Length: 157
Image (cartoon, rainbow, N blue to C red):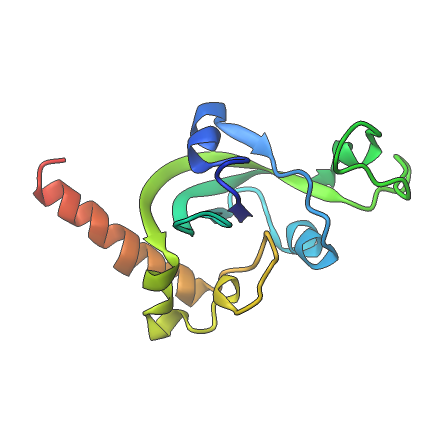
């Protein structure tokens, strides 16, 4: 799940503990939330459109997809005049904070052939939500995030 850190960062999620992932206005990203995300699924929280984009933390789906209330609010920048409460077009899930990680930057992610097919790394990808394949998740968790935790533990941090 991607977010611009000046709009909503991993630190914001840590402070709030849980938040609705609202404002998604792309059908493919919406469908990933509606059809593929389940309560308890872990998510990589990715900072985008910033000087140092990359994975900044881990979250967890805390509530399954439900209608995004912002689509019905005329004062919201995410308002959709074609949506109606009885026929919503846009959905969100709630995301719960799990932990902040070291920043695993875009260049580092791209340097690993094991992640070459990762959708978030595809040139021109603009989706705020993309699936992570199980092998990609394992590689990131074991090789990139766990290695940093081990190094920090050895240093006594």
